[in-house]
Each structure stands twice: as structure tokens, then as C-alpha cells.
Amino acid sequence: MNRHQQHLLHLSYIRTLILFVICVALLIAIPQLQLTPNLWMTGLCLVALISLNIMTYIRLHSRWPVMDAEFFVQLCADVVIYAALLYQFGGASNPFVFVLLIPLIISATTLPKRFTLLMALIVGGLYSSLMFSYLPLLDFSTSHQHTLVQLFQQHITGLWISFLLTVGVISIYVVQMRNTLMERDLELHKERERSIHDRQVLTLATLAAGTAHELRTPLSTLKVILSDLKEEHPELNEDLSVMQQQVDICNQKLQQLTQDASQSKSMTQPLDQFLSKLLSAWQLMRPEARYQLATYPDQIPLIQSSMMLQQAFINLLNNALDASQKPIEIAIAEVDQHSVTVTIRDFGTGLTPEQLANMGKPFFTTKGGLGIGLFLTVTSLASQEGEVRLYNHPNGGTLTEVKLPVTHQSSQES
Image 1 (cartoon, one colour):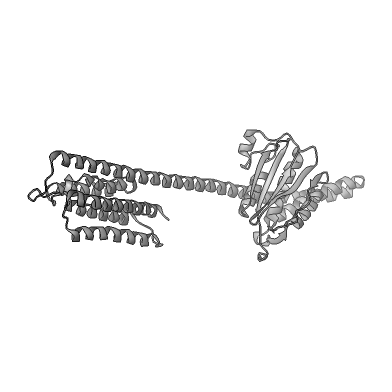
Image 2 (cartoon, rainbow, N blue to C red):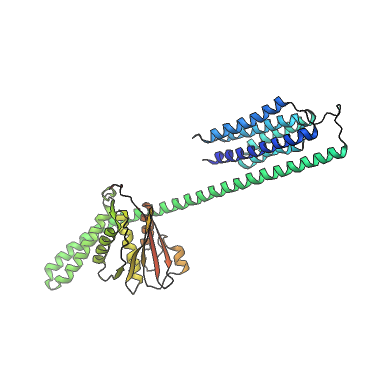
């Protein structure tokens, strides 16, 4: 629903309220003041207002957006119908004449300046015409007898009701408009944050691609030099073999970094199998790692496993291991029909308020590294409709919560 569709919806509410007040006022005023209105003209105006509201309701269910001109025509229709009703009941002397201001106020708060000026001319012209052309509210040539005091009191009562009606309508509409503006500002803020985030990811991807390309040459050179050193210095064969192994690992990582994204597929997998394979691979990468894995719950959910998700967990595990002097604790904390939460707790010093506020932002680090590990983790989990949150544990250390969507049995491997 676009901006003017919401305004049109609010306008239909206002019409309904005004229609109700008009009907109640006529039912009370006609017998009390012994009015003899033209029932055909009055009924025609009320039917026109009801029909306009029904047409508006149907219009709101259309896919076409509401433009400025269309919304302005709707307001003009309201003004004309209100003026036609006022013409039959005293014109400008009717205490409910303030209802003509409502479309002008709506136009001033929602439409461009040219439409507001045109609406002001229309309202001013109709009000001026009602000053001289109208059907008298009371016919003093007949047997109607009203004292001046009674007429004044009735006019004051009408003004009071009209004032309350105008206040209520304006208040409701302004509140609705404020809520609409707040929602739009919130959406703009989220869109701006997403744009900044996308630019940061693009920057990192560009830097990673350039770095991967530039590192191929020095790694190839190191590989050749190490091969020559092994022939020239057999006594250093063991140390050189370790160095060559590390160079090979770097080459493998570069190949993974530059491979086609389409080769990295996701698959439906039970969470316990995913964690078991993940921890086995992580143990090979970090032989010094110590951890405690809590007993799996009876209900093991299915998740979409991928290389991105594995790397995201490895980043979190590495962060926890680097911060903790004791074995870290890994557990499946919560499982429901839609999501599963995995927790990783370390026993380090915890995080300061500043660190908690900046966690997940690019190039922010507490370990002296590049500061992109947690940022890439957050991005990877978000791409799979997951999220990660970090807290200071009440008993010390940091608690990391990873929330993942649950895949049902009918899901297929993608």
C-alpha cells in the first residue's frame, strides 16, 4: 500500500464518522426544530457520500497506485457533497460549516502546494456562496415560534458539536498521518542501512578478489624457492615441508575463494550431523581447541547446510576459543517449529558496552585482526534468514546465540 492509499483509507474512516454524525444530527434536529428539509435532495447527498465511500473501499483493493490528482478529486467530491448538505440547512449559518475545512487540512498535509492552493480556492468559493445562497434553516413565516435565546442556545450547541467533531477528525487523521510518516522513516532508515551494508560487502568482495589475484604470484614463488631449498639443504627438510604444507593450504584457500558461487550448494541436513562434521573439521584446523558439546535434544531439527554457514560457525568458534582459557560450551538451546538456537559460550573477560555496540561492523576488532570475521558471519547468516547475537554471560564470559530457520521434511536439496 503506497502513501496515498493509506491516506485514502484514513479518509474513508473520516467519511464514515462524518456520515454517522450527520445522520444522528438530522434525527435529533428535525423533530426538535420542526425542520422540513427536502428529503429527496438530502437523501441524494447521503447516498452520494455512502456511494463514494464504497467506491473508495473497492479502489483500495486495486493494484494501481493512488496518484496526487486522484486523491485530490476524492477530496473535491467530499467538499461538494458537504456544501450541498449545508445548502439545504442554512448555508454558512449552519454550525457544522467547519466540516468544509477538513478536506483543506488533509490536502495541506498530504498533497503538493498547487493542489492545496486550488483546494483553498474551492473551499473559500463554496463558503462564500453559502453566505448568500442557501435554504433557511427555519421558516419564520410559518407558525414556528422560537425565542432568540432558544435559537442562540441551539446554535451554540451546534457549534460545540461541530467543534468536537472537527477536533476528533483532525486528531485522528493527524495521528494516523504521523504513524504513517514514522513507518516510512523507519523503512527509509532500514533501506539506508541495507544500502550501506551492501556497499561494505561489495567493498570487501572487491578487496578479497584483488588480494586473491595478487597473492598467487608470491605463493607460487615461495613454492619454487622451498622446493629448491629442500634440494640444497636436506637437513632442513622437516621444517621446509611444514612451510610448504602451509603454502599449499594458502593456495587451497585461494581456490575456494575464487571458485564459482554456483558450485557452493546448500543441502538439507540434521543439525546434529552438521555440528558433528563442523566440529571435526574445526578440530583439524585448531588442534588445540577444547570444547564441551551438550547432549542433543530428542527433537533434532533439519537445517539448510552450506559452506557459508560452516564458515560462519567456524568464525564464531575461533572467536570463542581465542577469548577463553577453559573449554568452550556448545549447546542446542531452543527448538521450535520455525527456528533453532545454537549457543556458544566462552569463559573470557566478556565484552565492554562499546564492543557490544560495534560488534558485527566491518573493520572493528578486539583481537588486532582485520575485523571482518564477525561482519562476514552476520552477513552469511542473514543471507540464510538467520541471525547472531552476543551477550555477556551473568557468570562470566560471552554467550553467542545463533538462530537458524528450521527446514521441514518436504524441503529438497537446492
